[in-house]
Structure formats: structure tokens, C-alpha cells
Length: 276
Image (cartoon, rainbow, N blue to C red; front, side, top):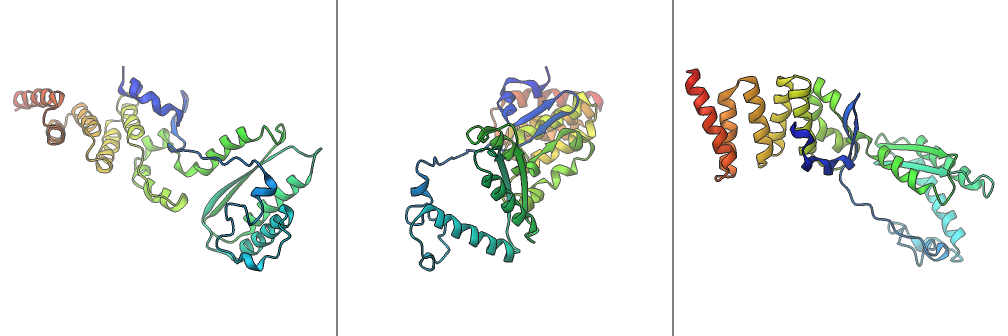
């Protein structure tokens, strides 16, 4: 059984998509989703009781009766002003609309107006997706909207195994791509990259590609015993015994009592002696 099917890898399948004809795709990072229940719209959407949505605005300039509609009208006005004038906005936004046409067409109109404002904004780092769920209602749209919303928001996070096995430099440039498009620092997922390496090594018979992938993993995670062991295995398959030996020696500096590394190092030393 190949390593990428071992039990400790199955925990990652919640984040991976596997299609036999296409391979593995890493889609979203591990994350915690926090939702705040809206229990009272009149209370939650007025300036005195809200979560301070206008913490950078001069609320004293907003003369309101305290009603939710007045407050939301103010939000709409300020949104138009900001989106018309700011060119330095950084965000990925997904708008999902349900089919409420019979109950209230205004939701669809407002959603489209907001989407249009976002699309017309000149900020190069502002990206927006939009989807109208014709078969969903107000109370059911949250489930597909959350799924497709996360897919869209983390689209740059995707790592496709087919592309990587053609060009491992995708992984080299990955961190810079995420920083530019998702605005946070990260590295390619260690376990997923290791999986790609084994697919390249055994399933696709691409040992040199596998070595490049494993080498990058050791650069990103130099304290991981697992990635050094994987690189050593690829070197051994390729016949690079001296390089494999150095990997096991590295493992022993990280874990001096690692008996598996000791055994493999001894086996390699015997092979090297026989070769010489």
C-alpha cells in the first residue's frame, strides 16, 4: 500500500477533492468558521446597538431616528461613496442570492446593485463573485452559498496535482501567490505536497519530479522527520545513495533515537560498500 493512502492521511480528505481521472486537488485550508446569529434585526442593524460597523466613521454626522431602515440607507450611501472613490481595496467577496422574487424582488435588485458597484471599482486587488440560486429560498440558500462561497474565496489556494507534476515550480511560487491574492502568509500544505511527491514517484514514474517536490518540502518544513524520510526514499529509488544517506543522517540529528532511520542508514551504508 502506497503511503498516500495510509490512514493518517484520510483526515485531510475533508479539504481535498479526489477524482480518479483528474487526481487530487487541495481546495481550502483548515479553518474555523464563526457565525453570529441575527436574532433581532431592528436591534442589530441600528448604530447604537450594532457591532460598531462604522467604527471608522463619524457617527455623530449621521442623524438618524434610530430605525433600522435609516441606518441601512446610510450604509448604502457610504458604500457607494467608498466604492466610487477608493482604489486600494483588498478583498475577495462572494455574493449569493436566493429566489425571493414572489416575496420581495428588492433583495435581488439590491444584490445586483452591490455586485455592480464592486465590479466597477478600480481596485486591482478587489475580486468579486456572484451567483443566483434559482432553486433556493431565503432560509435554504445558506448551505450552498457557504460551500460555493468558500470555493470561490479560496480559489487561489488550489493546488492541482496534475499541474504540479508537470511543473513543480508551482509550489515554489505558491507562497507569493497566496500573499498577493489572499493577503496572508502560508506555505504549501506539508502532507498534501508529500502526497503529490509519492504520486509522482510511484504512480506516474517521475522520480526526478518527485525529488524536486520532496526537496521543496524539506526547505519549507526542515524540522519534519517525515519529509526527510520521503526525500530519502525518492533518492534511493533514483539510485542517489549518498544523498539518501544524508537525509537519514539529518533525521538522526532531529531524532537521535529513531531506530527506523538507523536501520535504513545501515542498509544504505552496506549498499554503498558493495557498490564501491
